[in-house]
Length: 600
Image (tube, rainbow, N blue to C red; front, side, top):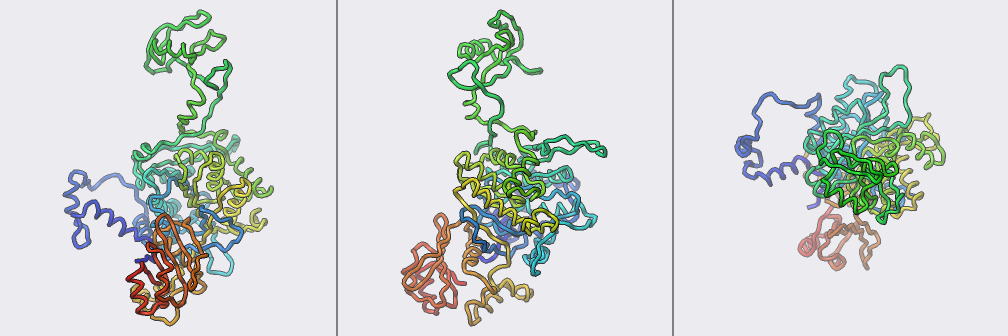
């Protein structure tokens, strides 16, 4: 049966638990005494133990479990170059719920740069997860012209509001990651401690990979009122499953360091490191005599036999014209094969900085300065993508996409190494202040800038692939609108009432487009947004839209009258989706017998 609602997250988790422990379920409910018996000593019976709580945390779970009746409608912008990548304008909480089915365990890497909770109390109100109507009201999209603003007054719940916003989004995002996937979250000093605690809870302390300190400012601050100038931001890194990630392959960075070949070594460029051990390191003691006759008696990295083998292989050099302490060569080609492990300190000269990112935006947008406040450096995000060990067809998700740096970085990296990584970006239609340079340039929403940047990067790089653009909106199906009018009636009874209406269009909302129906049904039934859509299929009598991905095919026919002969136009393994009112009783019975049929 077709699914017209978003994933039932609570039921999915129960099904997973039932698959592991079927014996603890009685009449579809959990018998906790049996559960405790099975788990035995792994149950913590103590009344007092460490936990991280805040006002509203229980409501976060209600928000997570609540279904969404929203959909993603195709952007009518004709200037969007089509491709397999995805840009979505809308509230990321609703979008993450919509992606739960189609993108479950399909994302290799997530990068987000969420609101830092600075200079304003809150950006996203924690009631947005309730319904799509709530989202539209709070983004002012139900008015003639208006979008959301992040400028809000203090409510005295500074940290609480931020935690209530970020927790459900992080919880939902974990479901989308592959088992060898990685998530990177940028944050500043205000919430880094809280973020670490909720990441530990959602992803598990054992999956913590590191805490990167990125120097985002290249200049030295000089503020008489501050004891410590803030030049760095934090990036917390977690694996979905640390062991699976390691087995899949740990990501490495591009090479840094100076390589040269002053002695014309046949193995190519090289650099060197001391053969002498560092302090408090073990090793072997013996004498080494330099080419000039100087004697060194130290603790060395390897045994004397190993040293002589390296010396004979031209892998030992003596600096200071042969008088210095020996050093071991390491070759550039070896490091390129191994890659370079990241550290937790990322300096601005190698990983980019804010001014560089601003200059990049200015260049992209024809010299308009300050088109976006504090964009992230493309260089920074490219290195994070490398660190995640993304491969040929992996997908990178950014659901706080801001200026669109993540899409830029993916395309830039693909262009450099011939990769085929994909991106999914989600951005709220946040209002741009009228006094800003961006507004003067004609941009009304942050999402306008995001989308425009992607288009400009595609043109600049002469990039091979475009993107599909979608907007979050109400469902195309009238039944969900009627549910709000009749809260005491069941979904099934309302659906039955609508199907008894005289016209096919009565089951749809006003203005619903066929292509939007295809994507809504597809997304809620396991097709990704990159699935192939073919609207050019015609037979002698019928017109179809085909949605296909991997081994699945859905044929949509929106004709108002369908006969038995349609069976000849549908492949055996495909599913036909049509209006129920388009079928007579005998035709419906025949098609159900001979086809995989679903009706609207």
